[in-house]
Amino acid sequence: MDASFETLIASYIENKVGISNHFLSDGLCQHLKANLETLNANNLLLKAGVGNDSKLQHNSLIRSDTIYWLDKKHNNIHENEFFEKIEAFILYLNQSCYAGITDYEFHYSLYEAGDFYKKHLDQFQDNSSRQYSMISYLNADWETKDGGELQIYQTNNNQTIAPTQGKTVFFKSNELEHEVLVTNERRMSVTGWLKR
Image (cartoon, rainbow, N blue to C red; front, side, top):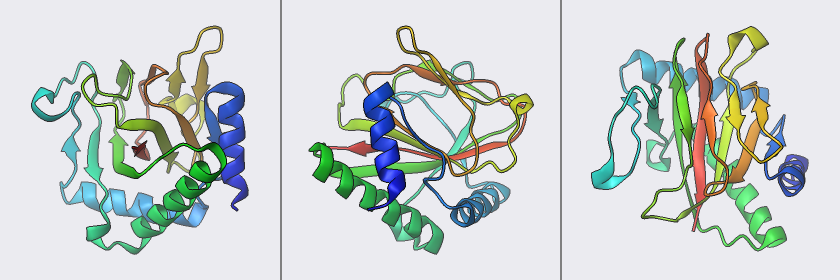
């Protein structure tokens, strides 16, 4: 068992927000970041939307990031290493917490300076398959002045989380409203959901 799995789950049980500062290795983060930067340079990222299916809309007043969906069919060695880590975590989560997770989906997320994502929930109104949200950050040498924090809203316990390299955040998709505060530097992550 990976110690970061227990760190993520134990902190989630304590605070409803799991945080592991070293869920992804620095090496893997650097490879994923390089992939994301190459995809962006080739104009393969898409403007992120809100809503799903026929309700999908693009509103730059709500969110202004761009995304690229990860898929095993891309056969990228580093993305597949990320998937292996996620699958191992799901196995541990299901065995230790009876979570019943059967699927997942992840995308790269890129915020340029000035970008943000206003307060929202991660679960769609007409589809409850997303059970847990997971965000893994790829930003080396991130400083307070760079902004771009994840702001999570809880009664009496709001949390502001810096998007530093290797850190993964984990919470229930239908419970906690959150937002990405305006970033002052390019901010990169792999963001996704554990589903059933």
